[in-house]
Image (cartoon, rainbow over all chains, first blue to last red; front, side, top):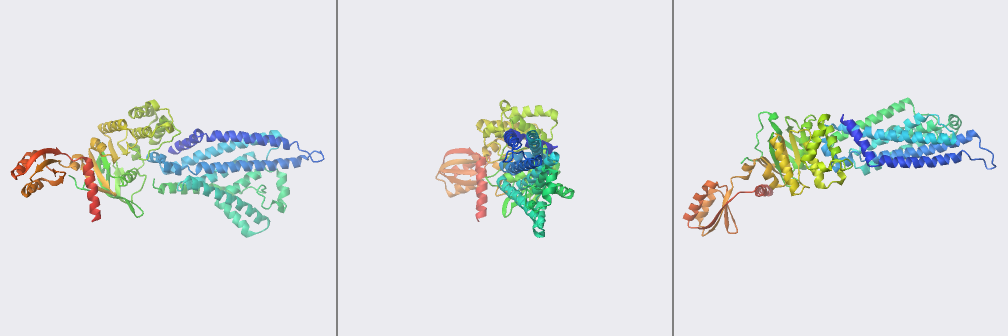
Length: 285
Length: 318
């Protein structure tokens, strides 16, 4: 099937252009540095030299781990946008698409192929970084987050969502423009999620609804919150969840996204891909 | 010669490699192609000539389904233009030829074998055949990004030859090639014709078209100005004479035989058969003129092309 050919081509391009190598080297460096940091964190003592209680230490490790994963999710989202934004437009502009689209290839196969290739790259990146980071943290501190698989799935979902959006915009606008639009929307959704959490704690329906709408329009932040949930110690959720301190804290989540919301996220991706197919189909080459 | 837009459709669309009927493309208010009607029989090399911006590439994109017409119809190999199945029987070298620079030549060809749906066991023979035809065998494993423009165009030609196409559409195929490459391309096109493949050649290089095309269409501003066999397009030729003392009856005698033009002391009569030249000379001598030289002239495609384009522009200015 042509879609699989194009998917393979997309992955091969990432490898040949040394994107995979660059990400692999940087990931190893970052994980090495954070491993060193976690190692030191686990040997900290109070100012008077007395040992820090294990529960507090676990909490500190989990919080730092959330921040580290936040960085990985940011790198993932930015990389996904940078790679997906020119995926269609650059080939149309350069003429590479001309000889390919003149072959017996449907345009839906082009979109599906690009999407499959990029999604595979995201899954590879998330699987590698999450496994390595959690292994290093486990070795350095003994801390194991409650949901490592859920964490990887939520992070992958976040990357796939923003990649799908960038791919859609790439069918009509240049890579530069598609990238900027995707990133602005990504950060807007993040702020929307924080606002929604504040609205929820303080009972402001208007702010809470604004947050909910932003999460429905672009599910990246809600999926990020899902990955935070999978990283927190269970006890911490119960303790902090009962206070107003959680309001607007983007690094604390009391409950994971609902099944209905996850179903909506799948529908959202399918919808965006369908619009991308329609958009490319209508486009004059 | 055939009049503009005078191609009659064949009895069955299946007979033609390309057939268009009033094919039209507008981009907003701009007219890219206006009422293109033509037939390209199978196994024929067809030249599609026109100045830059005349709608040649638009026509090709409409035939391949890369772009949609705003009016009219087109059939390729008996199927509506853009039909997915038909595209496996068509080879295409775009004017803007670019291939994945991070792939090697052989990988680009393999990719197109896959996309064209060519049976896997044929790939090896097809790819080595294409590479040797376009003279890139020695560069099969080199990255495309290291290729010169001419080599990339050769590769594009190789890509268009994959899968034994029944129609090959070449959009300015020699724009980046040196004289050797151009001669090679002409040989490749002739070989395609010899094995029954139709070639649709978009070009503004008239010498090239004159050398290899069976028929041609001249387009300008999205309209066909003339279409027909090359010898029909070029007309019957003429004669030029160096004369003195040409009287009015002598001038009238020349004008009766064809269209008369005077240029730097030479009188040129276009549209005269070679057989009629002795008679014409006798008439001119009888009229009292003195004849110093008589030379047959044959209009080149370039002259014919320029006459058509200039005539068209004059018509629009009126």
